[in-house]
Image (cartoon, rainbow, N blue to C red; front, side, top):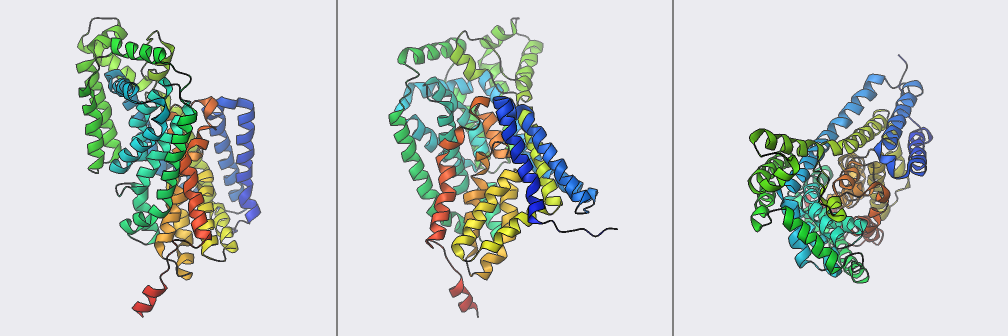
Length: 488
């Protein structure tokens, strides 16, 4: 058998450069339709190029690379399942009147001038209590997007505020999987990690809220006037039975997630409760949609149809149609495909050793605490762009840099903070990453806006920058020299 060769840095970067060229080319040729097939194929072709280089040049057995690809895909299955279920949840919650009720009351109490900071804070509170940014954006985030659009606020701005708040709450919540994963990889405890993150996440969210407040003052929803808003309220009220009782279902869901019920079964239950809510509270709308007398067969058929293909009904109002005609498992398949192809590419890179080579090359430029933290942040971002999964962007750098932090006498909480400051929050900034693909689809950031909402994710941009600044200035960087001396 031929001995496996170690890849050079040039060879390792070849598939990455190839992918970047294809993605740029697709965006120029297909524009907004790039994520509906072309980018998926770009990821697949880049994965195949990686596999070919590994097999032909590096002599890596095909089965070894295939195993890594399958393992990589398996890591994304939970995200894909959640994505499909959230599609059904959104559709059944629209049918049942839950989302319309949220939008109805939101339009009555929220002023366009302070909508963005309110959206950010609301999502932060929900994510903090549930530990899930995805559940937050997929539930209250959807409703807030509807309110923002009805008020005439641009979709990218709304998405940026929602995502910023959701990811802050996720990072600071002891219930979050990534918040537990980062300290586990670094070798520190959960609450030490959370307290240390306050130095970076605290300023980042405060600056973000101020930024959204200023943005709201300059942009006061000029696209909507009181007549337009009233027209939307009238359409909602004339088609749905609106009432505070419809908040029962989302409250049950948030309590279950806060009680540490896994997200997947909790969201399935949320979708089922939404379907039951439609049957109990929206019989008149169901009769309009089906066009037949309501019986068990017709109701079952319509509810199931909405769950798998999305809500679709003509309200004779363009804005309301745009707000409510969405959701369903079927409409999430493009995103599931995108995530799986990204995992093929990431798995091939890891299986051939190219991913490890690129990451280890970074360590050659590390000379102190500041550069080590910068290297950690940069590697996490790089892995989010290539491996396309935030969990890999935490696990791989955590394994890589743990020894380096120990050798420099740095407390492991510095590593865990850096992992979250970049690994967790930058995933949503990458459109083909599972985080970016999920939130793009869930929040309805359409094809023509897919590369614009990121600039409004203030918290996600500021977190790694503040972390880099503190590291380079040696501020809040704690060492373990004294602890070692005491133990000797």
